[in-house]
Structure formats: C-alpha cells, structure tokens
Image (cartoon, rainbow, N blue to C red):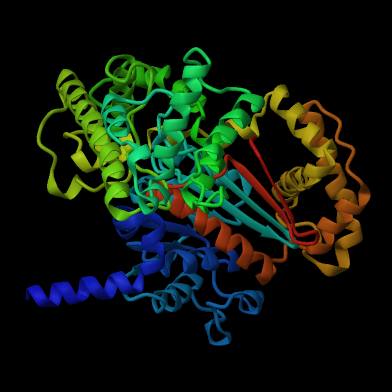
Length: 553
C-alpha cells in the first residue's frame, strides 16, 4: 500500500512539475483544496475554467440556467453542435471534466438570479466565485452577498474586441509575493555578530593563489569595505563617487603574476559589480512599515488571522531583538567560490535566520496565548495557504513568513457597491485616466457601464439585431449622457467609440475570450494560493491595439 502511495506521489509531482516550481507544495495543496464556482458557461467562462482545471483545482461548479444556442457553438470549444438546445451548464461541465481526472466537476441548471433569491448561501461555500456576462443588477446583488462573507469575486467580460476583469476582495494578504527583483539581504551595512566573527576569521593575505581566486565575493567586498571605512572615519560609502573609490580599492586587491600583470580573479570582478546592490542600506520597506501601523496588527483579537498575528510578532521583533531590522532572510546569491567556504558562509546566514525565526516564533505563540488562540493546530490545517482563524500557527508557516517579511503585501479592493456609487474624487481620477493617451482604454469602462444602462432600459444589448445598429447608436449615446450626468462629470467620448460598441452587438470573440481566460485564471490562482500579487482592481484589454490598462476604481 505504501509503494502505491509513493508511486501516486511521484506521478503527481511529474504531472504538476512546472507549477510546483512556481508555488511549491503548499501552493499546490491550496489549489487542490479550492472550490471554484463559475457563473455562466460562456466562451470566456469555459476558457477560465480550462486554465484552472489543468493545474489541478480541487473542484468546480458551473451555475448556468441557459440552453446552448447556435452562437454558443460558434465561439465555445467546450460546446458542440449536438449540444444545441441542451443545458449549457451540463454539457460544458462534462467536456471540461475530461481535462483532468484529479478535478471533480458539478453543475447547477439554474440562473444566478434565482439562486440569489432563494438560496444566496449557496455561493458562500466556494473559495472564489467567477462571474461572466452578468447584468448590472445581478452583479451588484452577488457582489454584496460575497463581500459580506469575505469571499473573493472575479468579474470577467468579453465584449467584441474588449476584455474586462474586476477583482472584488475585501482583504487579500500575500506572504510569498515573488518580486521580480529585490536586493539580497546581506547586512553588510550592519553585520550581525556571527557574520563579523566568520569574516574576521578569514585571512586573505596568507591564501594560496587558488584559494584567493575562489574566496566568495562577499568576503572580498567585506574585507575591502573595512579598509575603506578605516580611511573614512568608519562611514559607509554612500554616494556614487565614494562607491567608485571602493571599487578601485577592490581592483587593487587582485593579485599580480611574476610579470606584474593582474591575474584573472572572477570573484573580485563579482565583488566590484556587487558594490551598489550589496551595500544597499538595511531598512524596513514602506509597505511593510504601513502594515505595522494597521489597526489589525496593533489590536489583535481571537478572530485575528494568522497573517496579522505574524505581522505583529515581526513588528515586536523589529522593535526589540531586531533593533530596527526584519528577521534575516537566510539566503545568499550564487558566487564563484569553492564549496567548503561557500557552504560555511551560507551556514552563517542560515543560522542567523533560524535564530531570528525562533524569536519570532516565541513571540507569535505568546501573542496567541494572550488572545486565547493557543490550542493545538489540527493536522488538516497545518499547511493552509489562506488566512486561518483559530488554533496555533505551524513552524513552517512562521519560517516562511520570516523569510518573506520584506515582501509582504496587502490588497484591499473597493466593493462593487462603492464603485457603482463612486464619489466625485474617484470619478475625476477616472476621467483623468481617459485623458491620458497611455490609458485611453479606460474609455471602454465607461462605455461598458453605458451598455449596462442600455440593457436595463431595453432588455437587450446595443447592436444585438444587425438591422438596428444605427438606431441603437442614438440610444446608447443617450444612456452614456445620462450616466455622466449621474456622475456629475462631462465625458467627451468620440462617436467612433460608440459606433464601435454598437457594431460589436455583445458578441464574444473566442480569441479575446482565450486571452481573458488565461489572464483571469492566473489572477484566480494568485488569490487561491496567496502567492504573487493580484491586480487591484480593474483590468481592461483592447484587442484591436493589443494594449491593456489596470486602474483602481
């Protein structure tokens, strides 16, 4: 029986190898326990689900009360000609389920309007709800229902050549944000005792030629930094000129051969290149410092999530043992060096990181005890990636938090109700975006809102009937004017844009749906795994120009 489990584990590791490299075992576990709800099996909706099923979400449920129409078959790969007249939810679920045997699929042949009216708690069982092509009235009701339960909502829409996404989440915390670029946490500006002891124990003057050229560049930089500081009253090089002086000092340390020509020592070249980045002052990033001042961090209580308890523990560490600095990250970059000294240097940072983590861990457990949350953690909750309320916090989670303390992120979106009742300040910002040539795609947000007004008034979309396109242009302009009046602003939108929207006739092009489907699935995975930073909060894609814009509304 054990060998079978091992074999299954190996098969799963091979199957999901590439994504495991992105978000790790704990991220994959969060994905495999996620329950996703898709509202409306449109071309966009099925493309989103496809890109969630393939990496292995736990389960999905399709909510759709519509029957398959001819136009559905023309743009949706998960519907066939034989499915016309049948339940769109049922047929799409059957074909989507064939993509991955690890994922279970279900469907509900009912409109979201009926569910919200008769069983609104239905939507509260999911990890995330993805809604496609909902009318404004239903969308607002759904948004309010999910907002009150802190369940993320991802709104997606494809309208002709325009793609639209809106993330609605009350509070989304990210520990492993995976920044594209960041400075290494080397602490050369304020070396800790263990690092000083190790570096001072190395005498480069007595080294052989091979040892000299295979000493980690961090050691080389430290040695010459100390010499530079002795010449400058103990100060660190700060400005460009001073750093160049340090670089020249390092170059002078390269050994020469019998002919007086400098040897090729790659480790010294690496030390010169690392001067600017390695000597970056150790400080608390502004976005982390802001977290320390949030009421959720200062005023913990029994219902506080693990994230806020850990933020408070790190804050207390910074103000005491850390002496104004975050826990040491514990990693060092690759270097030209022999294995023995590189591993020894690596161990110095690892040991310091372990000691800092142990202190944070103790502070964390003391905080849990103070708020009455020190009961044992259940086995099933040990590797949760989403915020957890209740129980203790695993050492693995504490270690991960300390390692990524400099990269913590907090996303708080506005609710749909706040957006749709925008105060003048937000509206002015939006109009300002429209006037910016680089953000002129925001005009399509206004037009889509006008389209919703059109639907509410006429129960159809502008240009839905080909022979009424020109007549609908005037009606859409009227809706647009009324919308701007309600906002109290003047939006000078060219007639060309209005005509364009009417010509779309609410069509859903598969190429645009495929693009939005991939983008939306990516954002959903960020929300589910609590890794990487999702957008905040509105994304608009213009397929005609191959441009996009993200705005906070």
